[in-house]
Image 1 (cartoon, rainbow, N blue to C red):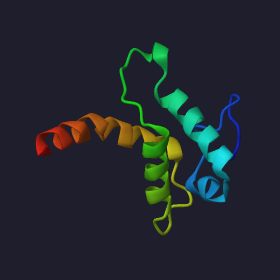
Image 2 (cartoon, helix red, strand yellow; image 1 turned 30 degrees about the vertical axis):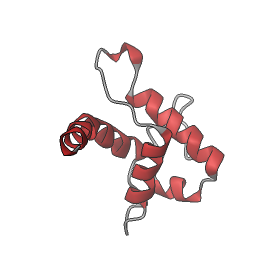
Image 3 (spheres, rainbow, N blue to C red; image 1 turned 45 degrees about the horizontal axis):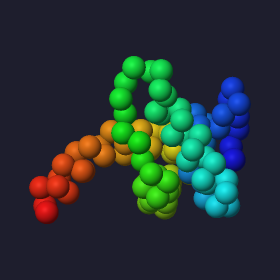
Image 4 (cartoon, rainbow, N blue to C red; image 1 turned 60 degrees about the vertical axis):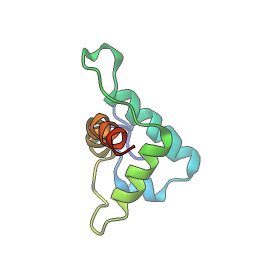
Length: 94
């Protein structure tokens, strides 16, 4: 799905690729993006989205008009950054 850069599509995958992909390609893309956003040796502890959470982010974001060129890794990174806040808010609501 999408072009490869250094053996990975994570940096270049866009919504247009997501919309054209089948389920196995989508799951492989989620894993590729996750592995680049959440690199173990980066020294930064980042939240990780589940496959279902990432798919929901991409499905919702890529459904917007004019979103064909949106980068999936940017969408993933932003959603992952807000995940701890979302978990706190959900905990407060219970």
